[in-house]
Structure formats: C-alpha cells, structure tokens
Amino acid sequence: MSCESKLPPGPNSLYVLTYLSHLIYKPHRALQKLSQIYGPLMSFQLGDQLMVVASSPDVAKEFCKTHDRIFSGRHLPSIYHNLPGIMNSSIVLSPDCSKSWKLLRSIGQNCVFSSKAMESNAWIRKEKVMDLVNHLRTNEGQVANLEDMMFATLANIISTALTSRNLFDIHGQAGDEYKMMMALVNEVIEKTTTLGLVDFLPILKGMDFWSKAKAMDLHRKIKQTWGNIIDERKSMGRVNLSSTQDFLDIVLADSSFSEDQIGNALIELLIGATDSTTITTVWLIVELMRNQEMLTKVRDEIAQAVEGDGLNETLLSQCNYFQACIKETLRLHVPAPMLVPHRAIETCKVNNYVIPKDSMVLVNAWAIARDPNYWEDATSFKPERFWTQK
Image 1: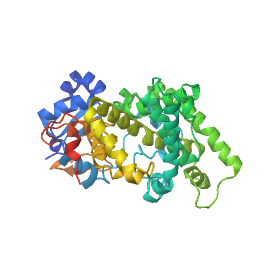
Image 2 (image 1 turned 120 degrees about the horizontal axis):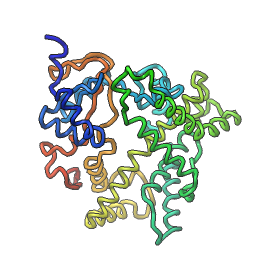
Image 3 (image 1 turned 30 degrees about the vertical axis):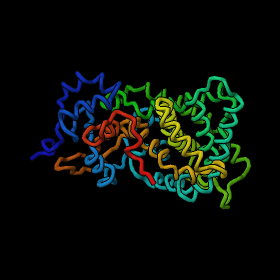
Image 4 (image 1 turned 90 degrees about the horizontal axis):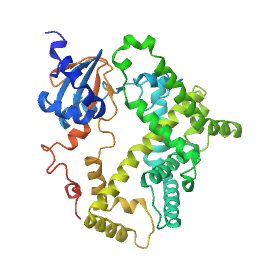
C-alpha cells in the first residue's frame, strides 16, 4: 500500500478550495466542523502543503507527547524566513531543534522560566504589579484600558528579567513609544501565524517580493526596539560571569550570536510572555464581572489568604477557587486556538496512519476545549469543574 493511501482521511482539494474563506478567517471553527465529518485525525492538501489536524485529546497527545521529538519542528511563514538571522535565533518557531535553538532555549530556561529563576525574579513581578496598582489608584474614576495596562505590566516584567530594563513607563501608555511597541507585537504575531499563498505554492517564491519587503520592514522595527538596549549594554561592558547575569549578558558573552539574532530572540520571548497572559487575564476579569457571585467568592478567598501578609505569590497559588477560575478561562478562551503549527521532521506513524515528513500539523486546542464529549456544558464558564475544595 502506498504512503498516500495511508494518509488520515479528509476532504479533497476541490472541497478545500470552496471552504478556503472559512479556513482563512476562522480556522479553528472551520476545522472543528470538518473533524465532525472526517474524524479527530484528518488530513488535506492545501496547494503543495499537506495539512494534518488533531481535534481530540488522544490524538493531540500523540503529536505533543508520544511523538513530541518528531513533531518538534515548526513552520515558518515566508516573511519570517526572510528576517536576517532568524533561522539560528528563533526559539518558538525554529524549523528544527538545532544547536543554536537548544542553546537559546537553555539560556531562556535558566534566566527566566526555571523554578530558581521564577523565585529570584519574584521581586520584579511584585514591583511591576505595584506600579500597575498605584497607576490605577492615581486614575481612580477614569476609564481604564485593561488590555493595554496588562500588556504594559507584563512587558516590563519580562523585559526587566531579560535586559534589566523597562520597555516603557506604565504611566505613559498613550505615548508614541507604547503605541509602536503594541503595533510591533501585533504585527509579529500576525506575520508568524498567517500563512500566505507562497507558503502553499513554493513555485511562487521567485516572485515573492512582497514578503521580502515586509520582512525587512519588520527587521527594522525589531532593531529599533532592542538596538539601543543592546548597544548600551555593550558600551557598559556589562558582560560578566557573576550570578546576577540576565539573558542579554549571557547571549552577548557568546560571540556566536549576532545583534539580529539577539533581537529576534528577545522579541519572541517578549511575545511569549505577554500575549497569551494578557488575553487570559482580560478574559478572566470579563468572566468574573459577568458572574458577580464568582467575583465575590474570588475576592473573599484572596482577602482571607493574604490577610496581614500583603501580596504574596505563594499564598495566591493556594487560593483553590481562584486557580480554578484561571484554568476555566484557559479552557474556554484558549489564547492560541490552533497552538503553534508543528512540522514533522521525519515520517511517522500515528494511529495506523502515515504522517509524511514536512507535514504541517495543527492541534485544534479550541475544539478540544469545547468538545461536549469531554466537557459537560462545554460552552459555559464553570470554574467548579476544576475546583478542589479543602
């Protein structure tokens, strides 16, 4: 039996073309409907690219855990391919697990995401949150843009952890600097998650001047964001071997990384630490405001936990109902509905179907989180499903 005959079931190319507008504008909803016809593991051809979609927990586990190494590659849109230095500096969207990817991931883990780093950086989070609280107190009674304030706070937290500097003043959100940063983050997210015609028809790459021009414009903006910070650190000579090194110290000490590579890594880490957390926080507050009884319960629980001790992350982690609300928000409002597109770095067999090398694998987390086969009253906000009373 040929490899093609062992592919997961799915719609033919003609049907995909008639369904294309739905796949472009609301892919998670469109793929959910297709999975109800073809099953939780399906495939279809989009141009020259084979698309494989997982729409159930069991199938998602095959790609994200059982065969995680084989599907550890990522698909880069054409614009991202044309960014100078990106192939050896992308942490989130690296096409494969190269040596530079492993090194950058290790540095990021040690400086920001490990348990030790999280504990040592607790003062940063507390300081930036208090900046936000004081800003809200100063502007009591005025309309507040919650999304902007959360992004600004989170951006300063990760920027301080990475470069020992704020990106901008929390009190000056309306300034040009803040607007430029928000625009850059949104642009990078759009360019890294939106695949163009050339991504599915490689024959057009020779005529793809648009992607190259947009990539150079994006490169200019990234350099404008981080260039001064990198140059300032270099001029200070703050590259040492002390225990107080931040991410920027370590990558500058390694002469194998160019300024372009460092800037690319910094913008990816910034987006990774701000975008999904901002979305989740805003939706959490929206859901609690819609449910005043839940809001009161959360307030009472937090007030009781921190009484007399002030703001403390450890105490907040012990607020079981509050944690359940966060989990329910992540379920109902998945920050990245399709996750990051995976790439098969070699041919693999999943559930008796062949997944060829270079297939693009999508995990429809949105569909899984709302599947009535796994969640009772799946479209309702019910933190109680995660609540463990003690």
